[in-house]
Image 1: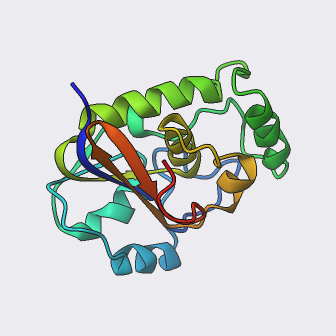
Image 2: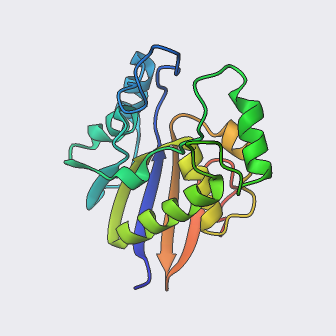
Length: 184
């Protein structure tokens, strides 16, 4: 079945920075600024709201006032890295070689497949708002054919960021920050 309708991908608002001994990925919350950002997001009225199970993603889409269904497949990329100040060097290497996976982690190619499969399953003809994460959203956009998505695009993605994927005859039309209009 071809995807139908519209997906509104929402990268979470400003969250606490990961740190050794801090909350794990499932429990890391939005900052006070992030909570205010989430409350002020302007999004289309959805028929459904789904989110990564990570708290910061749920908190970003919760102000819509509809029940938030969590879907494990919408979680952020498992890079196999611990919190580190030099994460950008490791991320850049992964973007340069999307098939590379660190021990215990997934490759960006695996993330792309996971993202496209999960999002395609959600595109049911309505407007589905999806709370997720920067690398997940970037790899989903790449998987839906947006050729301008690369490491610099991902690194520059704002928090929050909203990308709209509209399906017409199963073909995605993508818009959002950094894409310059309809990108696919």
